[in-house]
Image (cartoon, rainbow, N blue to C red; front, side, top):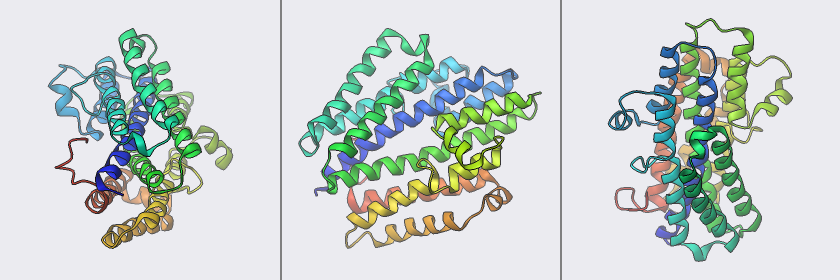
Length: 320
């Protein structure tokens, strides 16, 4: 497969998954902002989201204060923010259009329709009227595109490069979401929260990654931060966990490997082995923020290696 074709497929998938994960992060932050807490705590939670997305400086160049409304507008519909949901959906559509002939009509129409409907919803002010409904719609459209991909595409290189973009983006974004919420949890320590508030906090996080029912099946008791982390980091059976995402990346790399990709495949396998050998106690003893920071650094190296060996160089492609 030509590098340019693989590049378009990879980034089409990453942008679709990025839009979904941004919607998940915004949704859980919005729900948390409705809980009883100090103004300082609310601002810290939204700032943490911007910090983890590395967008704080750019945000402050557009807005004077960090508020839920400002952050949601910036992360959803600001066309000057390339990581906003509307820009991600547009980029996914443009990448799909460039290689339309490589995919099924059903997949192209799913991605194209998502972009067209997103523009309508933004113009109708859906975000301002019903933020949660808008975020659910973004997640639903991403689920639909993923289902069409799995249900209609040949299991060839096109299929695998779409999957590779999906799982790398998920591996990155799930870690960022966990880091944001565990950082925010420390901010809550200064507020007088009831047991009900704490349950709602961690339950909302689980629901934001579609893992609430999975948690109940695995643990069957009260929701505890350590177990939330264990489920979302180390559970191979949980499809949005870090170890599951890395496992999928390793599996795909074994199918598309070439003569130059051995080193990056080895690095991905090494990360997977370490995750499988870790316990949640070891992660908390080290510090969950420190662990997730190191994990994100390694995921970025793997992503960079994939770009080098399979795709277009990041500084030469105008599709990113």
